[in-house]
Image (cartoon, rainbow, N blue to C red):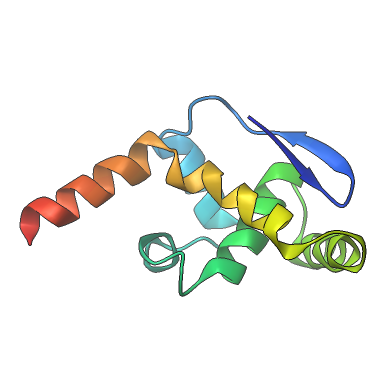
Length: 100
């Protein structure tokens, strides 16, 4: 999938499996954050931008701030699809519902 951040196009792998989720976690996306993206959306956005651009935290924050100066926040929210459409996320949500 393709995502635009600050006018730049980034491509995420078509399959976000466990290994890619581990990479996202290294970018700051914890399982807690992943479990409640409504409450932790900004952390999720930062992690996804870091992941897409292979950025440091500072570089990602700069891209996000420059994006927000020119484009709506809603455009950034789309990067959360990297997580929400992943097989890992779907499995985790299903498992959580089954435990309830």
